[in-house]
Image 1 (cartoon, helix red, strand yellow):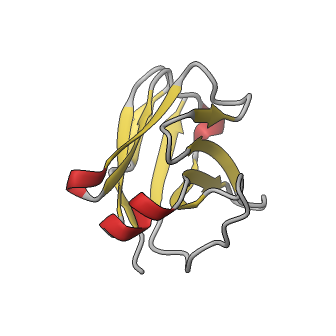
Image 2: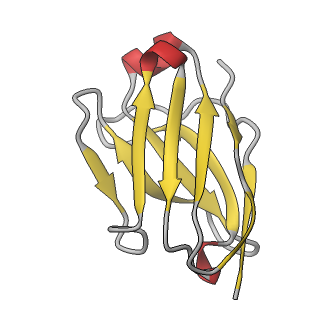
Length: 117
């Protein structure tokens, strides 16, 4: 199973980016999925989740600014990020959500998001 995130870049504070994660259709149909991020010197944190039923959850730090979605027909998980802040700077990854006990899959390539002030 390969998970590959893309769409990151350099953006000014207040700007937007939309990240995408390529995953297999089997993965997206079998697991609740999540977006994680890791800033230098910190642990990887889960910031957004979407269940198989389509219910979404967000960490307090991104609630109201980020939107997670998926398109199974395109084998893609999305993360729309609006009103970006410098503290959102991190490498972003996708993987399964732990909410219902699923094990993490092998970490794939992340995508760097840098927000300048």
